[in-house]
Length: 216
Image 1 (tube, rainbow, N blue to C red):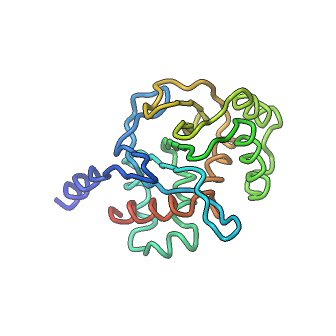
Image 2 (tube, rainbow, N blue to C red):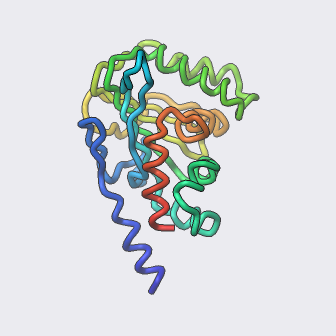
C-alpha cells in the first residue's frame, strides 16, 4: 500500500513558471519517447554593479524512477543537507537514468559564448580532467553557427550513451537532436556545470532538491 501511495505521489510533479517561461510538468527525452518529469527549475543570473541580472531560466527533467534510485540513499535527509553537502546532485549525476535540461535565454547570447563558457566551467570545477580534445572541439562546433535571442531554448539530453543537443526558437521541445557526442564522461561534465557544486543556477538546484525530497 505504501508503495502504491508513493507511486501515485510521484505523478504530482507540476509545471513551473520561471521569469514568465513555462516549464511543463513532462517532457520527452531527445530522440526518445521516454517521458521525463520536471525535477526543478530556476533562474540563472549574476550580481552586476549591485543589481542581479538574470540571463537564463533553467528546467531540469529526470526519469520518475530516479525517486526509487535515490530513496535508499537519501531518504530522511533535509533539503539543507541535500544541497549543502551536494548529496543529491552527486547521486543525480551518477544515476544511470536519462536527464534533460532546458535552458531558455532571457538575454541574447551567441552559441560560441555559451559553449566556451561551459568548457571554461568544466575546467574550473576540475571533476573531469581527462576529457578528449576531440569531444571539446565537437562541442564548440555544435554551437559555432548558433545564436540565442530572448526566449529561444537550448536542450541538453544526458544518458549512458552521452550528450544530445537540440535548439528551439519557440516553446516546443524538438523530437530529435541536431547533434550528439557519444561519450558519457563528457555528458557528465556538462551536466556537472549545471547541478554540481557552484552549478550555474543555485535556484534550480534548490528547486530540484525540494521537489525530489518530498517523495523520498
